[in-house]
Each structure stands twice: as C-alpha cells, then as structure tokens.
Length: 159
Image (cartoon, rainbow, N blue to C red):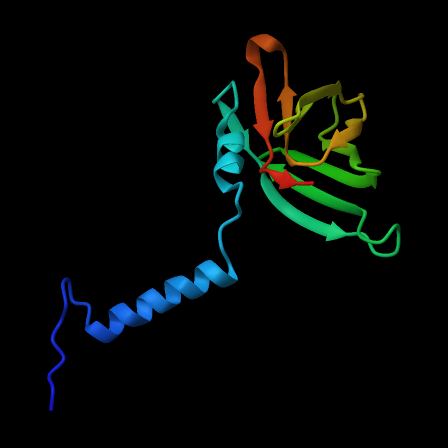
C-alpha cells in the first residue's frame, strides 16, 4: 500500500493533476475576454479621480420592439438615478436618458477608442445622444457648478 505524501505546500500528487486539469478546462470553456486589460484601463482612465461610482440596478431587454435592439438600464448612487434606453440604429446606438432628480446637468458618454460625446440634460433631466458607436461605454454625469462640481460615473457597458 502506498502512502500519500504531500508535494510542496500540502498539495498531494492527485491534487496537482486535478488542479492542472481544472485550469485547462476553465481556459477552454470560459477564457477571459481578449480585451479585458483594455476594458479595465478604460474604466480607470477618468481625468477626475474624485468621482462617485453608480450601481447597476437593472438591465432589461424590452420584449417585442425590434427584438434585442433595445434595452433599458438603470444606475443609482446615493441621491441620483440615471436611466438610459438604448436603441440600435445601424452600427450605432441612440441613448435616451433621464436623471432623477431632474436638472440641467452635464452628461458625457465615453466610448473606448472613440472618445466622448457631451450634452446637457434639460430641466426635466432628459438627454439624448444619437450615433453612439459600439464599444465599451461609460456615462459620466457632472452635477453642480464647476467650482463645486460632483461627478458620477456608471460602470462600463459594452454596446
């Protein structure tokens, strides 16, 4: 009868084989995205690091209308809610958005490798951006006057 003796730091020979096989399986079935590093760098590359990050509340696909070409996403942070509706138009997207509480706030949509587009929400908190290209996207909301500006950023979404 052979005795199982640990190899290295408490790993038995059969454990090492099992872990190597598990690693190979994960790499084959669910490898990290090729652009993972670029996505992380994009998400972290904000000029103003003093930002609040909103939470992703809900991502619904709207049934029936143009199949999967539309969807609504809601983000929240303390006292601000950002709701966007995405509509695919050709190879781009239209973003219709609403801010609660409403106000004339600056809205910036950043798309990796495409730069950013800016607009201002109206007094009802509504904003629209046409022709937003596909890619890793983030929405930045600038609240208040430049001297006391508060910035809220959403998690990245891949359009």
